[in-house]
Amino acid sequence: MSTGTSAKQAAGVAAAALVETGMRLGLGTGSTVAFFLEALAERVRSDGLEVIGVPTSEDTAQRATKLGIPVTTLEELPELDLVIDGADEVDPAFRLIKGGGGALLREKIVAACGKRIVIIVGEGKRVEKLGTTFLLPVEIVPFGAKATHAKVGAVGCQPYLRTLENGETFVTDNGNWILDCKFPYGIEDPEQLHRQLSETPGVVEVGVFLGLCHHVIEGRADGTASHHEQPATPA
Ligand code: 5RP
Image 1 (cartoon, rainbow, N blue to C red):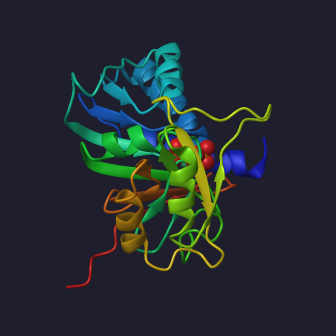
Image 2: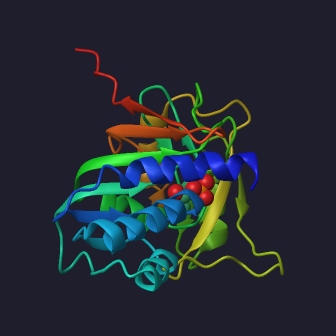
């Protein structure tokens, strides 16, 4: 098991310990969440925990179902007690970059329905400035993609259309495409950038998550995990 893997597992296991019986859960997407789902399934089996989850991707829906975690849709369950998801970067104000797995649109919709949002990460994802270690994913509709690509680039980044290893365009669960955007010096003003990109025709969702993280669990390679509560916003 690689160092990164055990740190992610530690975060996933620590998050499963937060779940209480009766909770309505938002189930994020990614390799860290996969560890959370395994640990949660173990608690369902051994502690008799009763939960129901709304998955943020087809991948998570399949994993959860295979593990015996009951799932439903946001239509059936529009209010969630606890959302557990991963992230690609977390800054000191708990602003996030998400979408490495391409599930940003559903992840943001589900997070917005959560009373409490817990982000689980392995080491190396807490950064001083967003956009310095990871490209910003932006989900766009295929129609007019070339024009949207140019408009997204005009905000001061280099967008790259996400492709699969075989060269085909990556398609999200919603039938859209992803532009992975490189900011040469990181993202100066995440709020302003979020506004600018959200107002760009053709952009469906932006991988900057603002005000959607209450608590961060950071796993470490030694199997331990630290908990960090959302910093108070300045008055
Ligand atoms: C998927 C995401 C993931 O949560 C994010 O990419 C982190 O993934 P991992 O846990 O595999 O490092 O936003 O869209």
